[in-house]
Length: 358
Image (cartoon, rainbow, N blue to C red; front, side):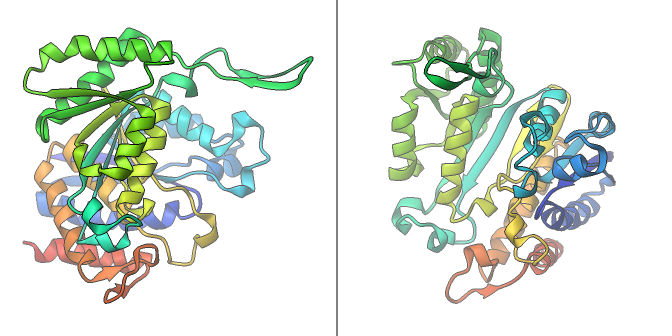
């Protein structure tokens, strides 16, 4: 089997974590008998500096011509004064839109006994293993009208949260399908008590439920969901929600694991897929070999499951990460009794653990 992957390293620590993820991709592919070809393309601030645009047309064309895209991170203070339409983050949004990636999957689980790294009590977070399914191309980030202006009361800004029935149905089906492969519990999160768009969301999800009779569906307002995520994360298995709510809740879920540097993600569409760590570009530590590459490595692992249809390879990489974390940590998840290593060493350790697993 042959597959082609495009690496879009981006900015800050993006190139560093992508290099380590590439190591694991190559090692895992070789063990699985998968012939893997890697290409590179610019995105974000790096693309803006080189071409004047955060997503050059050449990069988007390349992304459409591969089986999967591995992305590092975009953005940083260097580009904060750019016009809104030229910010590095606009390149990422345009990439998601151009590839028609409507479903974002963000797992959050405790790896390698890392309850010590979480800011919550160990008994609260131990055995946490949940999946956030976030709608990615609709909602308030893309809704029109939007803009800024002036009134007799001074400056104003406005955004529109908008969803149609088809957009809600397709992300809800992803949620139901993933719940069916996990513990068969789906939590749909909205704000239906005050938002019309959420009222429609709840109606559509409820109407779909009879088609999935083995899935236990529950609805919850987003404020309560945020509270329950911190109070009792183990009660949540698969969570499906809108773009804005999913953005916030998935980052909160990251801290259950001890560091946002541990949270991978997959963004899926009908024909394309993008894999990226949830963390930002962290320019303050870029080039210092301090970054945690595990979120990027685990994102690459998800590629084997959702793009290559090799779930056992995903599981093998996860086991390798578990093995390494029992003894080694990067600075962001350092713990007494564990050896602190840098970004490069951590990548090497995961490859070694993967090789030893046979």
